[in-house]
Length: 335
Image (cartoon, rainbow, N blue to C red):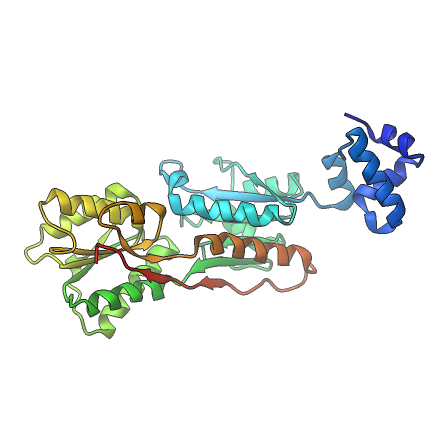
């Protein structure tokens, strides 16, 4: 690989001029810039990113903090994976790269130290709802920061989420319109924003439709398949089981479908089910899961755009307001 000195000799310019072309191109004439860039491509020169970072104070790197509990299976959740793909694509379109930050148990400033050490331009936060002090510390710092499904605020921090309350209300309204009056829920973890908001929206919607909610009709899972299966078994054993269940996550809904089938019941003849997320599996598992769809691509894109807006704004500019994406009902065979 060619060096910066070889490129300078090849072009007949100084090493300082070559450095300015790649680090502060606005101070170099267009003719010189084009000459150096063409020569770099010809002889295979690549600028040193570390040196560029020192010169421009920008790394073009975005840190990703993904604090799912190490004991959980959060890494494999299909909804989070699809968000990550959309986020990476949107950042790449602006020449930004993602750097996964370690989340070891080494103090409340571990993420902040990583951000400073790598001179990161911004941070994206995905948390498991534990209110980790290291995550809260990032939100309170002067670093452009966007949290996903985590209601954080700070001097340069905003968050992106879906209309979880409204989506739950859509599910209840649909089931009510279909004639159901015994409607239960398998809620997500109350410590998470989506879990709490979907349960709240579910309760409010039932009250608005004057539908009673017995305490035993509220069960909880962890957004994963096994918990949905266990919760549905619990509901089916009630003296008066529900005729419909709103499940606050599609993976849990798939587990609920399994429990209904194992009990010898038919869907939706005996039990109707509405999920939340619209993961790919929702359309594939028979008879097709009726669900509340989130804008997965929009989630990652909105996060990237909010982060880029903060990076490009003055340091004292206020953070963008929280972004709440709309949801929509997708009708399939389970309800």
